[in-house]
Structures are given as structure tokens and as C-alpha cells.
Length: 115
Image 1 (cartoon, helix red, strand yellow):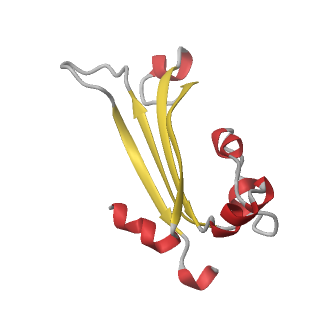
Image 2 (cartoon, rainbow, N blue to C red; image 1 turned 90 degrees about the vertical axis):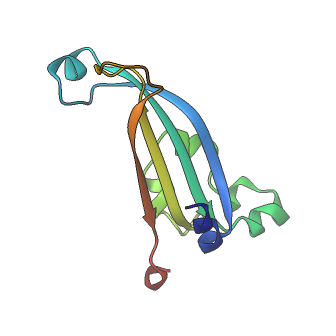
């Protein structure tokens, strides 16, 4: 799976983001909420930002952390992300047995025709 990095070159990495959310199947998940652990990988060409050292030539980690959708779509101001992977883990689930978390991982790649 890591070979995807060759599609977009460089990668921004955010690990262990912690949020409290109200998502789930069970009523108590939707009313009381629970902790979510999130990892994000965003592949993009960072060569311009590496030469200029200007934030305007990349995407701020803060923008990704805040989940601002426009940071992924406003390609007039930032280099395009060629692929993004978001992993969401739920560490406190009502199942019997020891575990670190249960979750989902979503991977989206920009098609070559949309560049």
C-alpha cells in the first residue's frame, strides 16, 4: 500500500489526532459520544515548497488538522493533493476482548485525467 507515494511524491503525515465525536450505531454513541483516533497521509509534490520555504506553496498541517475541505479543493492557492488516506479508530467499543481500536481506513486518489 505504501507504493502509492510514488503517485504523488512527497507526503504530509499527521498521526494520533484525538477528537470526541457523536458517531456510531448504538444510541449511546450518538448521545454520549466517544473518542476517535485519526491518522492522515496526504501525498503531493512538495518540491516547490522545499525550494521556496513558503507556506503558500504547500498545505498547512493546521488546515488538514481542522479538516477544512477547501484546503483539498482550492488548487489555485496550493499544490494539489494526489492522494489522501484517512484512518479513523474507535478505541472504546463495546466488544468483548482486548483491542487497541476498531476502525476504518479510506484512501482516495486523484485520477490522472483530473490534473
